[in-house]
Length: 608
Image 1: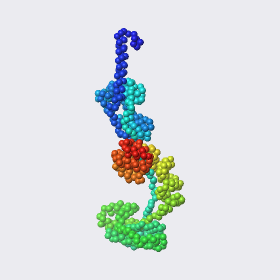
Image 2: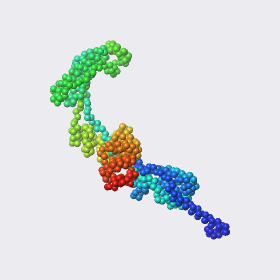
Image 3: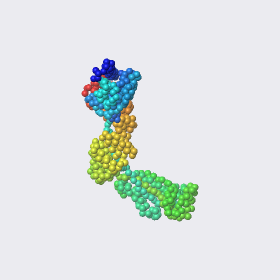
Image 4: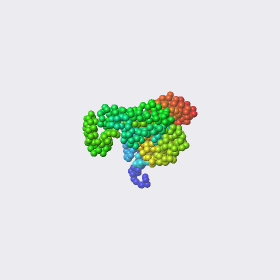
């Protein structure tokens, strides 16, 4: 009686044989699984990069593998789950990949018994500082196909048919290089322009009018007696009388165009000379009557005279702007006439249109006087002192300028606050004070000011850049990049800051491009190192001043990546000399993995 059922002798024999056969199958299946586990070393596995490397705050893993022929059982399933195991016992599992034999249905990469097979596995895992000292390992679970799908290799080991696990773990790679974390927060905050002019040149003008074909000055001419013209002619040296320094004087002589060309050229020159005498007379008189300007060497002034001849453009513009009914016809005649006949045409038209002589031509017979002076500026020392002690006496531009005269953050803060007390809506003071707070690490104060500045002027590229800097400093690089791009679109120079974002993102070639203008800069050297331009990195780090422990450390990394042991140990020694803590970091840093057993390396890192 088998299975509690009474049968004939033949039936009993069949049941016994079936039970015996089933046991053999189970035993044979288990043996095949065991053989796969024991021979897992025959499977070739190669991991890149090795050591693993953090990039863009992620760790990328690529594993290529080859299963040999006559290895993978037709009824077997292998659960393949790489894990980063850290020195302190933490585990960071990567995704699971399943392989299956020829008789297995469902998901999984097919590996045949006769030919074996190849595969490529890729994954990435968020970087964690604990990964700095870690190993990437794998211990696959192999089981007989039972039609079940398991969520994890642990479930497969616990529930899979005849499941067995490779033991011990097979090491795939070292982890993790984290050199990009040397990135420095040297973001550049922008200051909105103060609008202050260190040198302001002011021009005062006066015009002398002359009778037809004359170059002597007659103050009784109607245009010279005009109240506005007369006032300008009397006052064109008023700024000099204030004590402002004279820059230069220019005089332009003109003639009306109805006269002969050569005569008009000479006439305009004489009129300019008459104006020159007028200017010199006024300047000499002013020097005698005003002691505070007598030191200006007016006798040595080189007045620039220009004889322009007939003022054709002035004539045409005056006719166009006049009320003469036939002005279009007059303009057409002048434009169509030969240049040599234009004077004659005007003389003819004067007979037809007397208003030309009355209203148009007299204003063209002139000499224009332009006196250029330097507007008085308070001394920088006085502006700096008043910006703190008496800010209400300064203009907005002077106050904003005063903040640029000091490198002291506290003084800058006081000045910008004084600006906001007087000009509470000044976005420039807001964004500039925010730049000061960013430099001091006062992030809460900075963002409050930047939000106010943005409300006042959302198109200030300085404010947008500084918002980008704020979000870089708080670790939100995606938001930072958005603000930097907005700033760039409005004309801001964000290259350096964008280069820092590029390093964080792992876009090292872009980082090098954006940082290239910085020259002897630590972050540029870091970008070059990460971009595998080792000689470029060395050149940059070698010109960084002052060199600190980190600078020497990265020089050692650059040398190590080029297998230059002598320079590696030399730079590493200088780094440890500058900061003894670098010895412990180097002892565990996978950048120096190839030197772990070197006596010189050991002596350096163990001496502290």
